[in-house]
Image (cartoon, rainbow, N blue to C red; front, side):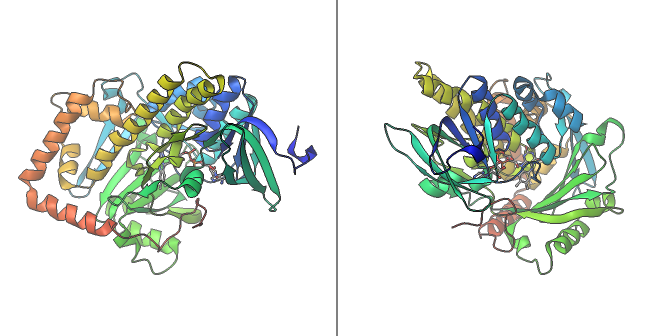
Length: 449
Ligand SMILES: Cc1cc2nc3c(=O)[nH]c(=O)nc-3n(C[C@H](O)[C@H](O)[C@H](O)COP(=O)(O)OP(=O)(O)OC[C@H]3O[C@@H](n4cnc5c(N)ncnc54)[C@H](O)[C@@H]3O)c2cc1C
């Protein structure tokens, strides 16, 4: 029954209540509705809406295919065959192609505008039978052991609404809705960065088949991304240490322009560029929760953990946790014997994904890491294994363990060899990331306590 025709003082009964209609929420809703469960999704915004996180990974494509949306994503996306890494410290760039990964079965991905991509996933959940409620914000869950759980929400004008659900899924992204209520979320003290970004027109493109590649550019205050879209516009942003962000004096737009000027390779590509609309910021963004589930709830995607976006892993991790999470919820609702096995695989895979990317993220701005990334030629399949991780093969399916271990050993040897330079960079980063960013606020997150 449409929401408008119901007596809104009575809670709506459902099997699963999902908070958040981003990639994680829409994916788990579609998969559970497909299995016949009565799924309701609350989304505080209205699609299409701006969201950051536009570069997809090749190993997400099979999950999008399983959802039945790959064709639609292909229509809105520009093909990304690899990543260009640009080191002003070496005075050159290098392109890493996914086709050279250990498992070369997924040689490309897409860059997408999230307003379009998220709407495709959201509409797909509707077409599979999920009930979606836009501009409805979840406020609180009352867990009632042995019974259904009461989810309280309110609509755009503040009218209270409620649902009675057998299972609750938190897919609220960086709002971390359930953590706000239950606690257990910890900021990552080693990586407390912030990002400033916007969409631009007139950004110079890479030639030929490289046009759709992401460019990652190191600079003294962190790193840059340049992500081209199919319509000729481009997402450009910088992830910076808090110590740099705290220097901001004027508007965010001016700060973004001033920061571009500090990085010649980015400034050169943006000589003719102009900002479309406003500039955005995301603050204090690395965190993790201790646990990702209880008897009657799950946290998926960014609602569980958020790590630095340098390897474009966010949507991939969200899709993976939603896909495996759907098996957990389904088995729980059926009281199926395979429930424990589903939970084990869900937790193993989600934790491994976060862990795999975290090591690379922590070391990405070290001179030793740059030296290895910029060197050509691969021994012991180290480059192929790193490319596998970059392509999203991060859940232990390919034999990356030994070559990645060798890569890490090589990193520490190069570090020791150039100890003074690396130690100075490490100290600078650690000193820079210790304080909380208050100089910019996060565009997507409720500024709640
Ligand atoms: C600067 C930056 C750059 C990034 N770049 C990339 C990239 O290139 N590639 C990549 O893959 N990832 C990237 N990411 C990460 C990516 O944005 C996220 O990992 C991804 O969006 C996670 O999906 P999700 O569904 O878990 O959360 P989200 O996409 O954030 O969706 C959560 C949804 O829940 C809704 N919501 C929140 N609270 C409530 C509530 N109380 N009630 C109802 N609805 C609610 C929100 O409106 C939102 O629509 C980047 C992130 C940042 C900050």
